[in-house]
Structures are given as structure tokens and as C-alpha cells.
Image 1: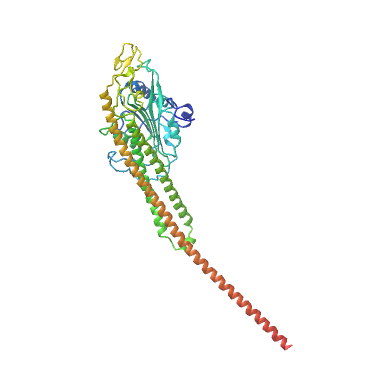
Image 2 (image 1 turned 90 degrees about the horizontal axis):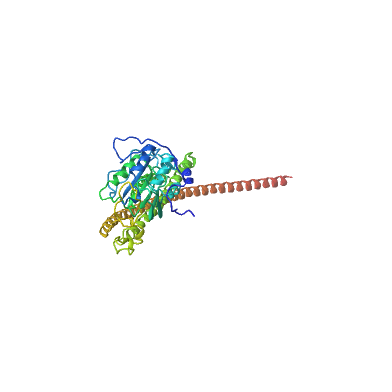
Length: 467
């Protein structure tokens, strides 16, 4: 079966089938919005070899690669300067059609195949992102727990560790409309380190993501941080789309209220075109409503996972692990043994000294006390509560937009029914008038023929009498 595999990297079949590549130089911008811009294979290799921290570094943090969209959408997105808690929507420089999706531009990567293969290995990209990107017309959020075997590195040549309980997230927005995105996240709970790649970023989205990550109080090592930002970006996109669709369908409803006389409608050459446009707008709005319902279900899955993180990975201190090897490591929740840094194998030829104390048997042991773990978990729980509350607010907002779509769809159906009843009434009246006319003509023809026959009989009688 096609379940999440216990490995890292894109398999060769998905690598050739799903993605396309084009190494391009990022456009220079006077307003610096990224921490580091990399545009050559050599610099990518240098960055991944020398600057990319390994997951066994025991240093929490976030490594995020923003893969710029090769073909920027005609939809010019300008985000407001509000915080994530403020209720402001997305602004656009000019009105553009919002229903021109399907180009699957998220698949087009600004890397060479060689760089992306290295990136999928060094950033621990899970192969399930290929399936999420392929389902381009369906919004999607998923999470899986996998085990990853870390191979030896140049700085720690014989450093091998099997990390269990690592969390993989995949997010995908529908490409029915422009400016769709895809996100993959791999989180290592033992070190608190997160690797992520955001696909299909226009420049405005890059600026918005960096701005949100610069807000005070952000916990970069919280696993659900980037999926939460992804939900904010998708909310901004959906708000503008809903407003545009609501205006269009209301315009069609008003057109139904001010119809030409039925006689002119029947003779009009454009009536079929107008009816086709109304049907198309009704179907587009119905599809938008279904998409909002589907994405709202994905947001609900995020809130459930936030509760799961609060009750398991970041649960309050409840005791100590009974293992003799880990007597000083606190139990932070369900199955905590696999989420905490325990004894790790270290080679004697490490270039840099290992952090922590070395036991007599030569094994490297981390020193994490109860207070430090509880302090970190408390910060993670507070961050999780904020993200959970914000996601619930977004869900309520989506429910309101779904009700607006339902109201417009029902209003258009009712207006169409009224017009149909009026047209049917006119048709019935016309048919009745025509029937009465035909009946009158029939009676007149019948009476005229009877009179003619009677006159002929009378004439014949007169001729007989003369004879």
C-alpha cells in the first residue's frame, strides 16, 4: 500500500513525473526580504554542506527554503501590514480573473535536478509531498510520524542515529485559482529542529512569510508553526476570491430581476449566451463553496493535531523515565522516550567537540534537566494555544463565507424559479389564447360549412320542385 515510507527523499519515479526544473537567478529587489538568496548550484552545495545544521545538533530552530515561482501569477498579491491576529484581507493592485488555474506551476522548481536531489536528502523532504502536489485540484493537509536514519556527516563521520517519532507535514492549496502553494515540513522532536520547503512563492508571499516569522514571541521550533502560516496565506487568497464571486453572482441575480418582456426575450439572439453565463457563474460558486468546505475540514485536522501536540509531545512534566541510561531526563508526555535526546553514538574523530558530557564508556550523553524541559514545553504549549485559537477563528470565518455562498446560490435558484414561473405563465396564456383562436376558427369553419351544405340542399330542393 502507498503509506508514508520510513525514508527520506523523493523517489525516482516521482522525481521525473511530478517536478520540472529551471535554474534561474532571483530578481534583485531593493527591499531585502530574504535572509539569504541562493541562485547557483555551487552556492546551494556550499550552503547545504557548511551552513545547514544537522538534526542531531540538538539546537532547536527552523530552516525554511522559499522556492520562488518561476512564472509569477498575473494576480498581484499585496498583503497588509497587519499581524496574524488582525482581520484584514488580501489586496490586489488590479482586478484580474480568479478562475484561471490548472497550470500546476507549483511543480516548476527554480532548482536544477542535482540541487533538488541534494535538497531532498539534506532537508529531509519526505516523498509524500509528490503525491500532495499531484493532487493539485484538491486542498490538502496531512501529517505522518516516521523514523529516519541519519547517515554519517563530514563533521561527525561515524555519527549514526535512528530518530523515531519525527513528524512530517504536507500542505497543498488548490490550483483552481492562481497563486496556489505547497508546503512540506519535517520536524525532529528530539532536537526541536524543523526543515521546510514552501513551493510556488511569488515575491509578495516571500515577504509575507518572512514578516510573520519576525513577529515577537514566535517559537520557531513549534512543529505546526509553518502549517499555521500556510493557513493564513490561504485564508487571504480565499477572502478575495469569495468577494469576487459574490459580486458576480449578485450581478446575475439582479439581471434576473430586470428581465426584458418575454416577447423580446424569445426574439433576442443573446438570450442563450446570457443563460450560459448565469449557469457558469452558479456552477463556479457551487464549486467554490465545496472547496471552502474541503479546506475547512483540513483546518479542523490542524486544530486536532495542535491538541494532540499539547497532550503528548509538550505535556506537563509528570515524572522521570525509569531507564537507567536516562535517569536525568524528564518524561514530557506520551511515549516521551522516543522524542527526547538520549545517549548518542559519537566517533572519536569529530572535527568539533560534541556538546554534553562523555561517559566512561565513550558514549555521548546530553544533559537536559527537568526545569529546562518543562520551561520549553510551557513555551510550546502557549504557542500551540495561540495557533489553535487562531485556526478556530479562521474556521468560523470560513463557515460564515460558506453560508454566504449558500445564500447566493439559493437566491439565484429562487430568482430563476420566479423568472421561469413568469415565463411559464406567459407561455400558458399564449397557448390558451392560441387554443381559443383555433377553437373559434374551428367553430367558424364548422358553421360556415354547415350553412354551405344547407344552402346546397335548399338549392337542390328548389330545382326538384321546378322539375
